[in-house]
Length: 219
Image (cartoon, rainbow, N blue to C red; front, side, top):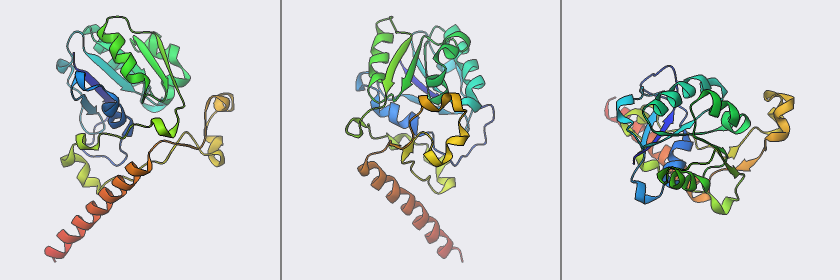
């Protein structure tokens, strides 16, 4: 049983700026017994359906803008007899949509750091639950992202990506969310440990330092 983590996109550019951090967090939350997950960010390159085999687990993270592409992937994966698990802000707000339109066996609502392992274990047993309530976990339960899995030849073109520090939308930007959905969201929830922030900040600095060194050597 292999684990696939897919960030959907109808268009692939070959390089990108915004890192889909959720993939690397769930990669870290995946128990070692499953091996390293296969990460596919479709903003970099399109997924290869042939890699998904019967009995695999396919995690798909969606927001509203890429939900339709996510549903396409979910239905395709289910036709290949894989277990399909949706997560992300859109699936959290509308779990029934992913179940009805995306071929989902299960939906993880909220933070997946803890419940992801349970969802995978249930899939391995052939009995995934329709909904896993991840909720909003405490900072002490955060899982440090597996940044070692980043495809360096793609992301180095961006000179690194700034680490996100909160989840949800700030109170000053709540107008971005429809009023009916505002009670379902939380606003200023940290999503990265101080240790990970330090490591990512250093990685970004190192990228700029390396770039500066290249400029000096070529001028």
